[in-house]
Image (cartoon, rainbow over all chains, first blue to last red; front, top):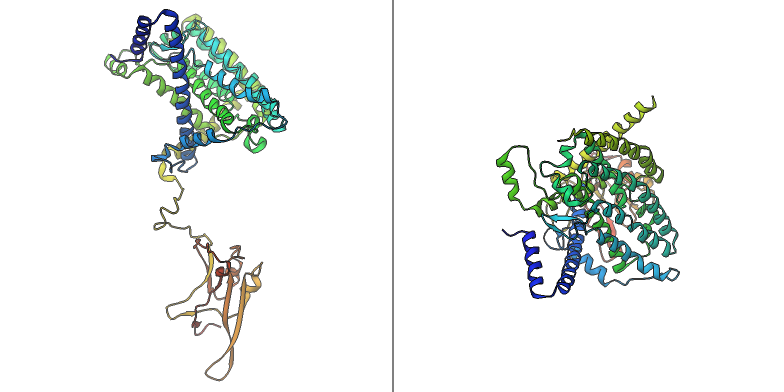
Length: 358
Length: 158
């Protein structure tokens, strides 16, 4: 059967048979890197188009519909424009940090790709502290944002960067706590263990209401962490022009833009892995026939489908809710999300100890 | 009780958020609600809103007669001098002189579509039309004469 797992195994065996082990490993690195960059490019193009289309339909508009059928090549045209634009560096900027910042943001997004399981047996690095790695690395991107804001030598950029810092520091707590609920239920930090624990039902169904609460908190917190509306204070167009990337143009701006969408994808992929069972097909109890039909859908489709469902959810409320003020933002985190997720964590721990989940 | 208010707050907040998402979800799934007009493509079938104000026109009937008495109420009502009325004196059958309109000059380039002239008109002879394709290469083409050549006032309108 043709599956991603078999293809990767075949490539691995062929490389080891033709080259010596070191060269085989190196060429695998290169292949993985190329695939990751290709995935980034495809994701950037498709997610921007999806966002614009979803936004348009929600706002009773048509959206891009001129370049290609249904405007499908609009983002390709935009990318070509951005590649050809001059990457300007302002005179008063700290040139080294200014040029470094987009790459930091991008590299942080790239590193997050490592432990994510895209399909059955199709994972770059099944590290045993997978979830911890994800939460740790996802906070690196704020350094890039702070760097960009500081190095631009611009009031708006600095304000945006400081807001982003305050926001990510606060929302990481509740994102982490909601991730921990799943870690408690699974008893492992490894992504593959977490997915295997959901073979007989996804955590969002098995974990009753407490897991549902932590799922909602997770979605809210990662929306804030990825600096998207209604938490897009860092780039608030109407107040700060474009926040931390005001001074960026051309390809450097495109990297920030791309990193935003990659971060959305990764946040949703984590959400899909933890709460919706990753690449696990949808199974209902003892309905053997139904479960068997569901098994025929390839695991990569399940993963991509769940991830895009979550992405659509994030876009849906992005285009529904207005932007929060900074005090409302911090109130929401410290007065509501954090206490709720702490209590929720206790409930989940009790549930795991007593074995009340399925 | 503080805790009860706190929990009430949370549920109230969640409910209001879901109400908002219901509305946007409705628009997302109901594409017939889309209000975008793809203008040059749908020029033949384009339907303008009734209340749209594009330009002032004078109503003429099939005998090329209008109801304008030349009272210049519209000219006085206009806030920025868009309308200029030139009157003449007709001699009627009994040999009496009667005031009548000679030229109704309308400067479309000055008009702000405020509708005050239409409100002021005592005989309702001018109205707003929903035409909007007004672009021309020469500004003087925007100065229009609203009464058609050879037209005269309807009998019985004073």
